Length: 338
Image 1: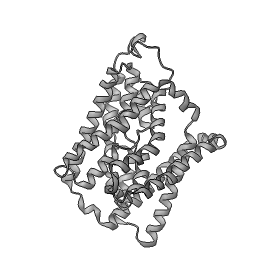
Image 2: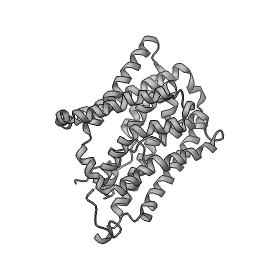
Image 3: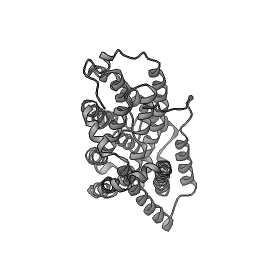
Image 4: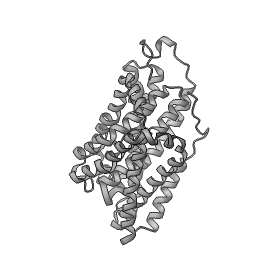
């Protein structure tokens, strides 16, 4: 597979700048009254369409083929939906010294969302890792997260999640899972169109997320919840997230070695198992947290940028590592086809 390219320097992700600009616009011009209702309705439709496209893009055949490397994928899922949430629960002891309760709720939610797909693939490719495995691992995580993330939120966040309830769980199913399944069903007829126009539809993806961010932060401004955040608290949040990312990067790399994965598989595990998806997390947060979604997604937005910067550096260093002998690439076992 042709190696994906990544900028030689470490600029801030342009999309993060767009997200921050959207936050600033929402702070200056929050939607009120009828405009807020229109924005909320448009956001709901955008989220449903976003997950419809996710379903239309995911190749069922590729996903089934990826099951051949089930040990790696199960490990990635365990990192994403077991280890991460356990670390999030452990961070409860940082309240109220480092984090306020709302920021902690956002941090805990961050640990529940699926892994990324695009950036995990890019970094795995740069580091000369197992790119097909990274593709399957990210896709599995996104698919499982549609169901598992809201269920974990129901158990771990409960009524403290800014209005989370059983109705929110039903709304998740109707707004996220049903469109995703519809996309899978219709993929047979529209899959070619989606593939041919993936660049245009990627802009639709990102535009939809920007609309979700604007709606969430507008509601936050109207509710006045941003007065709860100070520069000191943001600094504490960044420090906690840096430690969280460092722990996961270390666990995935050395844990992969303990499980006797080869170098290429450990690279895929490290990048897929230590990252969180902004694209999946933002729409879910808008449904689960309502007016409190702005504070809930703030930790996820900060973590997203941090993981991009740190993983880009790691990927470049891994690319300079010597390759393993063929008999050691899969821990002495027959190389996987994933």
